[in-house]
Image 1 (cartoon, rainbow, N blue to C red):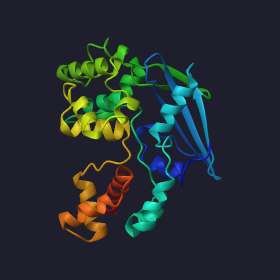
Image 2 (image 1 turned 90 degrees about the horizontal axis):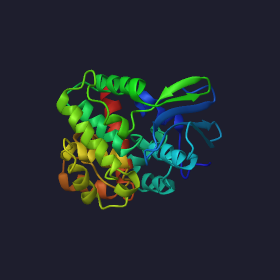
Image 3 (image 1 turned 180 degrees about the vertical axis):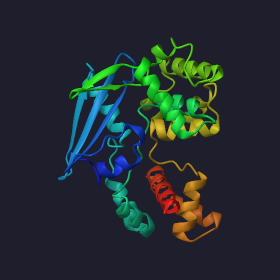
Length: 283
């Protein structure tokens, strides 16, 4: 496939967390493994981009290859028409400059809102590296193994498998109970990506908040980084700090006006500013 709008998988890999695989010479490559929404099976999806820009997708381990492929593309925000993203940068010089610097970075999502919810529950009040290690271990010990080109990758446990886990090393019992609530919500369709995306943002937040252990902050993360809303403004402090730095203003009214100018890609622009601010602080 040819991405709709500028896209650089190698740059996306900079923000792909523990799921990224090092790009081969001349080819950017990402391997992801996940329970496929609907929860009947798990899949491994391999996405490659050649130097010419074309995207190749291969699905391993799943019968419903179309559904698995669609989910994998959504993780990389490749399921969205990004041609208008370029126009935002053309009318906003700051966004245009950051787009060029970061090769038109798009948000990288969790594999599903279900996995986003589980990640936030597990990661609450522990270090990011600890949360990643716990999720990786859960995948290896309780997730489905999938063969990919002579190696084995492991998907995070599907909701029905998660419900069978009564003890998880490194996870306190109250968190396990909340993980079970998230698993039941997923099985009941409350964490379906397409369903959440079709809702108004406030309604999607309220739906996720009904799950025990997911308050305002985590619910926003599930909706924005799990479901993948394209045109919402998270208003987090890192993004606001980036706006103040790159636009040279402290005026709240002016900041609101700037963010409004990012429509219809406010989430994408927020992620771009957030990533740029974080990189600026890192030196």
